[in-house]
Amino acid sequence: MKTTSLTSLHQIIMSKQFSRDRLKMRESLLNANGKNLLPDDNDNLILKHLLITIAPNKSNYSISSFAKKIRIINAMLNKKLYKRKFKQHPNRIVFFNFIEYSKTKNLTHNHFIIRTHKSFSSTNKIIELMSLLKTIVDKFEFKFDYRFRNNAIDYATKHFSENNDNLIIN
Image (tube, rainbow, N blue to C red; front, side, top):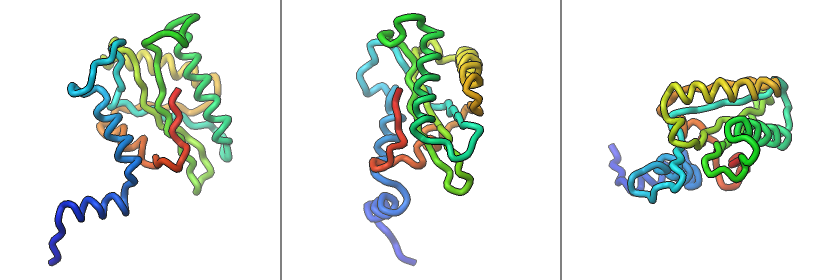
């Protein structure tokens, strides 16, 4: 049986299974609310355990028009919560969108993680926020789903790489 050192095992994992970009993205999202970082002046949190999925009901949907509609959905949500000056509001909700395109079924879909104010950290507040988001998404006739998962960041970033423009922050 061949023994492998930890450094060579790490190199095998880095070269074959993961890209460095994906690992950096996962680490930065996982450590975003950590104690070793400077506190956010506005008390915002990334909800690491919440995975939200939005998908159009059509196949062969354009990624650029889908990204534009996701941006509009984000603006509508923030406008509902923070009224007229939502763009300047320090606690506005930010989407970390990871857009994917299924080659076998020609389906475009989006997994995203959100950054909210700490007042939305309780489960009841998150469910209220998701019901508000669902009413907005339904206007665009998109499928909407959210789940509480321990691996939400890993699942959302599964196709992320530096050369793939599937990360959109809005």
